[in-house]
Length: 490
Image (cartoon, rainbow, N blue to C red; front, top):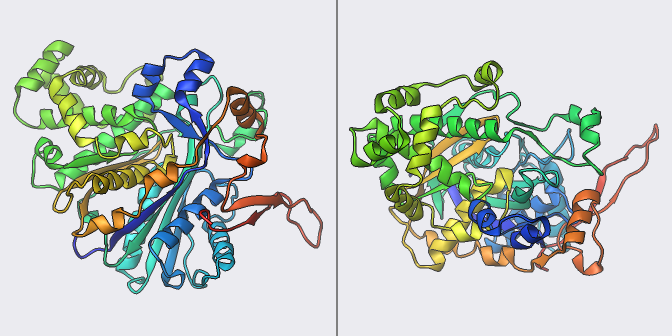
């Protein structure tokens, strides 16, 4: 791991328009204590003059400014997103916005000869982007640095089960040959992927179907998802990724989990990592000899340990299982019962509290950031550790990346000596500052119609200035956004 490039800095851009989830619960008669425990405390929404590209550019510009990055040294700019507004290009739009802002600030533009790939792999795209940038710097980009930015907009229909798990934001990471914050253990990585069919999709064809159009009063990017089936897919993918990660270790799975100082998951809402950890912990218990905890859990859940071990060893084809048994039939019924009981056990509660505490409260304010969710929690965790003077040097960390309907990844993270200097520049509090709570009527108008009143709500930094409307033989720009760009903090 020490021979590989790694992460030398991180920055966030979180848009200012905020929905307070306690207010949201009052508006729609939802239980605040439950929503806070399961989801978090708030989420952000895009201003009509923003999109995924402006979010990304603002995060990149903050990174360049905070870490004094020489734009001419950047050899790769990666955009990870599932909120693309263009089916032809992607990261180069962010590059254009960044160049405009650098021009306005009297700074050098990004080098002309950089690579500008976009990665679309559902929510796992952010960690995939970092991984691929590390590979770039380890091969033909050894004299360069790379920037990876994950930016997304999560929106769901009002009244749906996903409404409270919306969000918007971007996280940028600086990748350097000599990492100053942390490295990823690519050699010990565990991967798992499988086609999940209708797990979580955004098929373009949905916009042409009457059933979809009647639920949208403007263009929306609402996903097509099946909550229960998506949960099964998440459990299956993350469990199998961890199995492969543990198999590359010389430690038993439970010992490996215990040795990690902290764990970071793809986190669309507060409860999801707890749920995921319960299955990994149960797998660890089942991989060793019987313990008091395992016996107690299985007795309480009325589950036979031998049958449970057999089920954990299976790797069902979830799509085939769905087609044969329907969405309500769990592919891991014994594990579901045992994991639910494990989550009530004090030993597991203590484990979760210890392993997930870094950055936990900060991430409760981020909302769902899709491809940026894991990066955001990592940034919050390092920010939390440096603010509370917690030493991470020599401590192993675990990251679990996940993309709905796509893949999962389990990978070790190693903070490098002197990580504090880089982490001190993350400034999560600064990224979350300037929030403006919006009212119920403002929320509904913004959500349904994409409109909000008041000049004071115009965001700073990179924004959409106008859209082209020309459709002629000689020149066409219809639907193409034109941007205004400046440093978000200027």
